[in-house]
Length: 548
Ligand code: N01
Image (cartoon, rainbow, N blue to C red; front, side, top):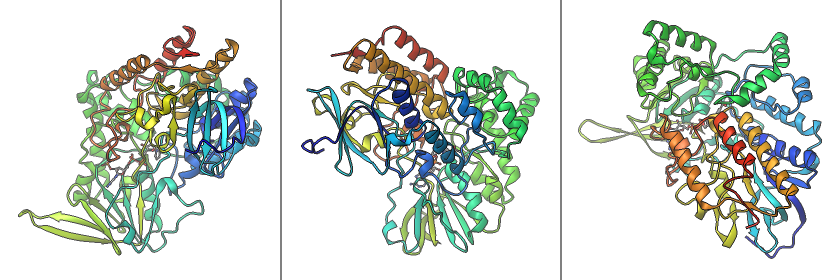
């Protein structure tokens, strides 16, 4: 980065990103500590992930009454959610409401993409450069860039030659896309693809879904909330808050303490049937041992596979959809609205890429290869007007590494993480003083209801900065030994579960060619993580070093 450009403004803290994390971090530092703070946001509005993700069918899989902040009783009182799961429009409206209610907008610079940041060792501050060339200096730099904000567009030969339109779901045009009368090809059947396909199929003349790995899904059972629902959520707000802060996953329920393997097959089926009818991610919490034991997991997996075979009428399509190669919930488990039912429509076809892999894209569409029994190749052209890439993200580390962040001795974050992310408590990287990460790698983040994880991180960081001000510390950093300890904790927590036992999981970075395969989120639970972070703080920030 260019270090000669004159500095525009000197701040106590600069925050990158105006989603859930950045807005709350701004509020805590500016309103509670009285610091001079600015948020740099690449988009033209607040919302973070939800500002960009407006693809058809997009909806959060956390329930709305917990997919929100809990730090202000007044805020909880004055906001009314309309549905069980909020869509992007309502989440962005909520975050705009928060922004205005707490007068945050005046501290946010929109259309401000951070290109890089360099730690100035002489002055103990960060020199932050925007893509526009503008510079800021800040004592603390806090990344609040979200976990799924860098699109993963596969490098398929010939995309440039495609005569139709193509879109990635995470960069969806804000004025929408019309599929009326179009032949649409959708690549990807993760949480996004499973939400998008039923909605695209409503208007497309034909939808072809290209599936590389078959996936589980459980009905979301979205519905409008009633006045009574809202009244109950508000009345019980403090109980719900305690629950989301004190459990493993940050959701509004506890994981069952009952083991699947200690339950009779008849009772197990009743429990799964009830969870299927209730809908949502709670299905994953039906038994305590689902993510710990392959055999226990198999009971949930075979229940869902049987449901798929019952719903989907074409036996060949049903077989491809139910041919799932990984344990249930070892990848992020999607929830859907009529996903499997969509394949019963006349205008919807499934292409099983395990049988006929994509070979290229040409002017007219997507070309797959059929390998004959005698080893001969047959090219099959799927003619398309529109391609939708529901192919996910360079998740958790992607956005952090796209910026040119340099710590002590010009060490870049890319170099520091060349074999995978390493940090202390998911919060700080060795050699990068006064840089904090909200929901970065090594923290519970995507394995939880995100706002619960975000509040914990923001509050910890804010209290740490308050402690530094009180004790007149200039810098905080974490030595390599602390990162070593924490990386081992993260690996041990993951290895105690079935989560790493998946071929293409983005939790492992395995969906992006060349990305180191490291299990990135902390799987030990938000409750345990909160306790560890609190103990570290109580012990005068054990494992961190001040004023090196
Ligand atoms: O991305 P994904 P996503 N050729 O990586 C396939 C959150 N989210 O956007 O499984 C062919 O999960 C890939 O195939 P495979 C949530 O945390 C939340 O769906 O790698 N196919 C897979 O099917 C979620 O987990 C909500 O073999 C290719 C798909 O594309 C996360 O975002 C809603 C391919 C990608 O699935 C990401 O979900 C939506 C290729 N070259 C998202 N490359 C809710 O809150 C990739 N694929 C409800």
